[in-house]
Image (cartoon, rainbow, N blue to C red):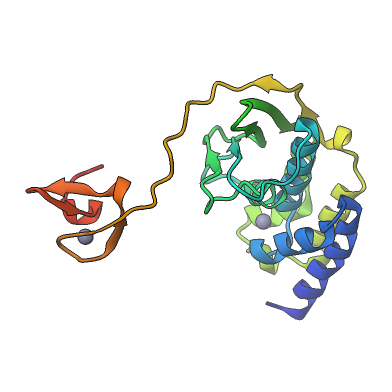
Length: 221
Ligand SMILES: [Zn+2]
Ligand SMILES: [Zn+2]
């Protein structure tokens, strides 16, 4: 990582102090985990904070909330979803974020216990301005995010940080989310009878009476 990228991420970390307790650490970490300075990730981060505020809850430390993020694969500014993960704590590894593939910069944050949710969407004019920005224009020409001059990417983030939540987002009222009951998590292991690797028991398949992992089973799913 280039030193100027590191110092820019640290600079925005300092700005993250405005986002409350540990805001600086989280915002800086979000940049380091994401890997480059862009507009999409910080926009998602701000949107995540707006959702927590709208739902009246704190960042998810355990497994009690879910995010359905509406971005998709293969379009610009998908980086938004990384910011949503970091701010809400609803991360991929915890199984708390799913992508709906609508190609929209919006998401719903759901409390699993109460089944209450809020939906946050980026205002159309914000996305339109962002897509006209020099950063996105360069990306469109095939310049890698880390190769966009830092004065361009930094200005994009600085501009976002001057905006209020109301400038950036539409935050819904709290609504009831039709969430299906999730099965209890599995804490049992079995060994695949073909490759010998361990499998979470609820993901094992049975072939000729023996447990096998999905790749060894030859089954499609
Ligand atoms: Zn990005
Ligand atoms: Zn196997």
